[in-house]
Amino acid sequence: MPKKKARTPSQGVTIADVANAAKVSVPTVSRILNNKEYVADETRDRVNQAIKKLGYVPHIQARRLRGGESRTLALHYPVESPHLLSGVVETPYITGAAAAAAAQEYYLNFLISQLTPDALLNMYRSNQVDGMILLQVSLDDWRVNLLREHDYPFVMIGRCRDLDNLTFIDLDFENAMLSAFDYLVTLGHQEIGFLTYPQSWRASGLGPAVRSLEGYDHALHKYGLKAHYREIGLGEVEEGFTATLDLLEENPRLTAIVTTSHFTAAGSIKALTRQGYRVPEDRSVMAIAFGGIAKGITPSLTALEWSPHDVSFQATQMMIDRLKQDDLPAQQILVAPELVIRESTKAVL
Image 1 (cartoon, rainbow, N blue to C red):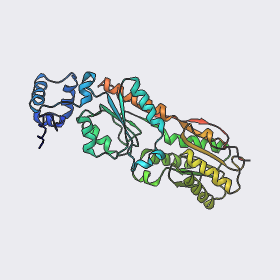
Image 2 (image 1 turned 45 degrees about the vertical axis):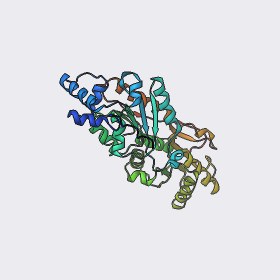
Image 3 (image 1 turned 180 degrees about the vertical axis):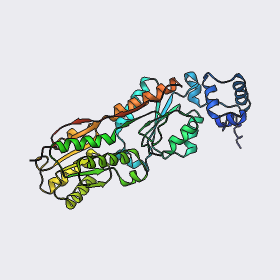
Image 4 (image 1 turned 90 degrees about the vertical axis):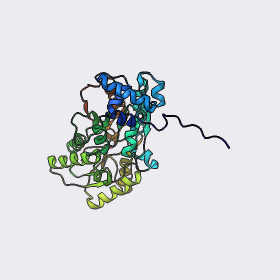
């Protein structure tokens, strides 16, 4: 019968165990492991003694790479199910972050699971990651609250409610809505429909859903317009098709539709055509969305566009900057969209 492999002292020992034995915080142990300054000699000696006694060995990447750091970042997008990934995540978010990480010789992990608080903390405690870029941020995001409480480095692509001393880059959804209505009203449109993010997003406080509706409400009040909107899915042409038919039944006088997705905009064009309307001669359609797809829609789609690649690249660079400089002031950036006028909009005759 084969002998059982002997258990080494370091197996199962985490940075949290070291912190507990030395009676210090996890961030303090992390600072010592990474040879950071501003740690008292007595504290440093106590932590090193605990490490030696417990046989703690940092994550394998941290042993292998310079500086005692993992040189690994994580991009976290919590989707409810992996099969939804293609419908809600733009690939440029991943490629932008990967390009920025590679340029600074960092690894990048893309996480789509619904992390638990313990799993999130253990990624830092076991040196699997040095920092994290959070996507799909809600107004009261538990990830933000937890990481801030434990003083772990992170950056948001999005905004929570309490932004004190937090670093983020986000799309300016509120002013994007105002800009869309400014443009359409200038063309003479007064009866405008709006297809926005899913109701479940708004209910859970996700920033894009909440802020887009806030911008929509401001636009209605600015121009004295009546509300005609539907909260629908993002990734399906058929969702846009069905919702547009529903809006037309509610108000046949609609002359323009604004959507928050190129896919649903394509569905709107399909529905308008099915009802005998020409786009843009009879009805106009525009989107507030990411660039890259609008040219392939017929007619080509007028849109207020952002570059997810550029946003993700910049967020990752911001994360790396914070890792290199502990006392770096918080950076807070709102990105305005670019209005690209194509073939799907026209002045009211």
